[in-house]
Image (cartoon, rainbow, N blue to C red; front, side, top):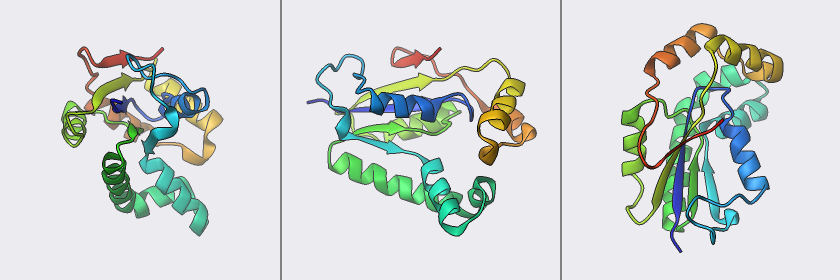
Length: 165
């Protein structure tokens, strides 16, 4: 059975992690692969490791982000290695804003995998920031950081791209 990697792309707060939870909870089918079993899926997420670390040491996500970002990347790389070795589906739940980053991540996946990108659009930076304050007060990203991230965003295009919303 063919395995897939899905690389999510979008600014913080656009719904990437929420989509992953729904995808896994509802046993969605990966496009063009009706025989895919979701239980074989590994989710790569730096936030997952940062949030776990923050909880463990009793600090906020924002504090933990600066302290644990490098370690979270190392843990994701280890998870990636193991997922490929065990031939599991992979969902890469990060911002993946630049074409260069997405290409680098795609290149790290064997050619035997199907490769998809899902882009999560947004109305405005102000709306994203407001949603973070309203729904994720523990994880509010500074407005200037969001603006800087928006400047690096290269909206993905191509046959393997789906746009949510």
